[in-house]
Length: 262
Ligand SMILES: Cc1cc2nc3c(=O)[nH]c(=O)nc-3n(C[C@H](O)[C@H](O)[C@H](O)COP(=O)(O)OP(=O)(O)OC[C@H]3O[C@@H](n4cnc5c(N)ncnc54)[C@H](O)[C@@H]3O)c2cc1C
Ligand SMILES: NC(=O)c1ccc[n+]([C@@H]2O[C@H](COP(=O)([O-])OP(=O)(O)OC[C@H]3O[C@@H](n4cnc5c(N)ncnc54)[C@H](OP(=O)(O)O)[C@@H]3O)[C@@H](O)[C@H]2O)c1
Image (tube, rainbow, N blue to C red; front, top):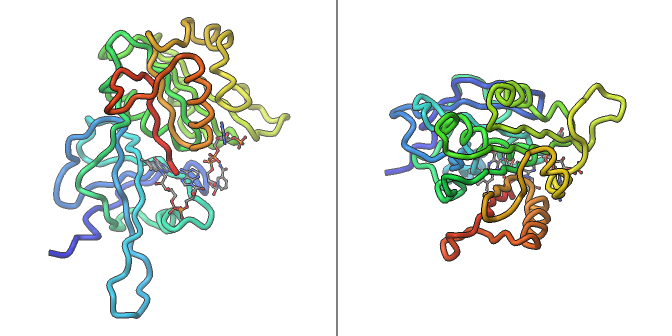
């Protein structure tokens, strides 16, 4: 049987700015399946009909779920429009009510399942790399799943930090949550009051301890890296130098986890 390439519907979109949006998408025939926060779904749209008698090609990409696993009605995705991208410019043209492909099963190993119960989780994301952390936080908050949840979010400019108000508000009432946003290209004279510079700056031992109240070390902390692959490579190299070991099937005791977006 041919695959149903229009098995899901966009039911809501929140435009944070013209190239950054949250899309809520539901399956047409069933509820959201079981998934673990940190996992991704594959979204797809048919490309143009080339008039060659062949069915149009389905352009597919993976997206981390940004909503909690408890929401069984729909999945939310936090997506940036990539200039000249094959899929995102078409996604950004969609209206509520339009249909698309959403793979029936979710996948991925970027979850907090392997994190020991008494660990601090330190989550570092660039751009839309915040998405899986939002799903993790909202799914597990208040359950005692972590000692502390430190979220370090790096973006180009302040308007790219679409969930900054949400996390700042949550951090004000949750003593286990530390939210550290930082920007790299925000004009010096703007009214931005948060951090500046790339995310690595927060990992510097003295600064990390001062801001978070504990030491960043592999026996007590699990670190997650998500988004820009160069950021991941640089942080991974830095953390390896400080004794962290990358988690894998062969090295399940490793406490460094990553999800490269490209
Ligand atoms: C497991 C996984 C989860 C992902 N989750 C998300 C998510 O939650 N939100 C999201 O916006 N993207 C996410 N991505 C990236 C996404 O799959 C696409 O690669 C992205 O949307 C670009 O698709 P495109 O077809 O428009 O661009 P393409 O034509 O595929 O162009 C790709 C190029 O765009 C750049 N690029 C790709 N993704 C990004 C990005 N997110 N930010 C900056 N530059 C990028 C890179 O230079 C890359 O080479 C994820 C990727 C993976 C592997
Ligand atoms: N963000 C926007 O306003 C905007 C506007 C137009 C188009 N776009 C499109 O969106 C795409 C994605 O842009 P994005 O801003 O979401 O993602 P991004 O380019 O990955 O930048 C996100 C953050 O990651 C930082 N970063 C980059 N390399 C790093 C490294 N090696 N180590 C640590 N941090 C690093 C960036 O800092 P630096 O600033 O120092 O690089 C920035 O603060 C672009 O390719 C473009 O097509 C975005």
